[in-house]
Image (tube, rainbow, N blue to C red; front, side):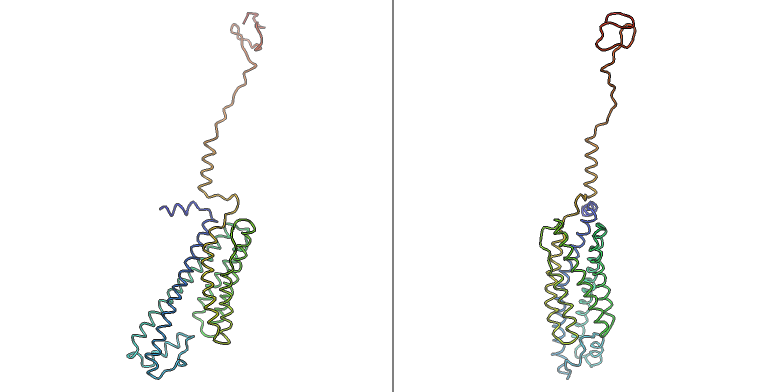
Length: 297
C-alpha cells in the first residue's frame, strides 16, 4: 500500500526514470543468468558429443549448430533414443530454460523502451527520448523475428535489430550529455553500453565471413553488462526539470497558501465622520458646537 502511494506522488519524469532504472538493473541480472545457462548448455553439448556421439562414429561436422531445427532432426534420427536419452532430456531442459530467460530479457528491453517513451511524454520538447524508445522497440521486433527466420536472412534481420539498439543507446549517451550541460546530471556520461552493443554488431558482421566473431561478441557482452548497470545508477541521479513539482508538493503548497491567507473584510473609514448627540446632524471631528442645533458637544 505504501509503495502504491509513493508511485502516485511521483511526477511523470520521476516515474519514467524509475522505470528505466528498474528495467536496466533487471537486464543486467537476467543477462548474467542467460550467460550461466548458456555455459551449462555448452557443457551439456560437449558431454553429449564426447560421451555418446563419438562412440557412435559421429563427428562435430555432422551437426549444424547454427540451426537448432536441423540439429534436433539429426539427433532424433541417429539411433540415440536409447543410448543418449539422458543427454537429450538434459539438452531439452537447457534449451527451454535458455529460451524462457531470453523471452524475459526481450520483455525487459521492451519495458526499457517504454520507460524512455514515458520520459519523452514527461518532457515533450526533448525529441531524443522519443528516438531512444524507437531503437529499443526495433531491436525487440528484429530479435524475435530472427528466431523464426532461418538462414542468412534471419542473421541480417538480427544484425539490423542490433544496429537499431546501438542507435538507441548512443542517443542515451547524448541525452546524458544534454542533462550534464543543463546541470541536471552531476556525473560523467558513460559510453560503455554503446561500446558493448557496437562490438556485438561488428562481431556479428565478422562472423559472416569467419569464425572469430564470437570472441568479439563475448567482449561486447561483458562491456554491455556494465553499461546497463551504469544506466540503472545514473538515471536516478538526473534531476527533474526546474520548477516541476509532484502532485503531493503542489497540494501541500496550496494548503499552506490557504492557511496563510486572511479573509479581507471591508472596513469603513470613519475617521472624518461624527454626529451630534442632540439632533443627530453630521459634524466635523474637530467641531465643539453643532452647526445645526448650536448646542455644545
